Amino acid sequence: MTDFHKELVAEYDRETAKTRKILAAIPADADFTWKPHPKSMAMGRLAGHVSETMGDWAIHTLTMDKLEFPADHKFEAYIPASTEALLERFDQQVADVKKALAAFPKEKWDENWKFVAGGQAWIDDSKYRVFRDWVLDHAIHHRAQLGVYLRVLGKPIPGTYGPSADEM
Image (cartoon, rainbow, N blue to C red; front, side, top):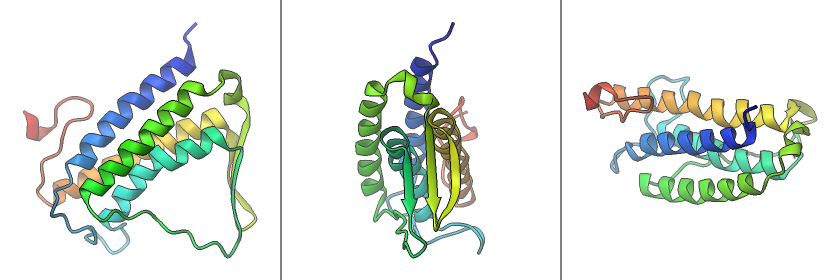
């Protein structure tokens, strides 16, 4: 029988390394207000969201049972001032998550976790499903979007699941 906790920790390590490569590919002179479409997130907001998903969301999932915001809560999205600031924050948060993951009791993966905003439950699932869906899979999804942003801007893309077209 596979130790799913050990595998999940290893997957987090692999995915954060791949995520860091994409975040590091954002040029120092990037325009963080740029977006490919009016309905798209600005590049700085998207990069911040990728970072906070692997950081803040992971920590909240591991250390809390419920994250609740009142209806009048004014969420302030993390928008980095620079690629350097983004990487610094990402590295610190990933280090914090790795410590929390190492100390996380395996039996707690089945416990419930909720995200409630304005009295409405947006996420209500096991800690395992939340970590899998809303940390790992969610970050992978947005990391790919960020790769498209970089491609549209003519910037080289680092490979994540093998070499990219820029590395061949």
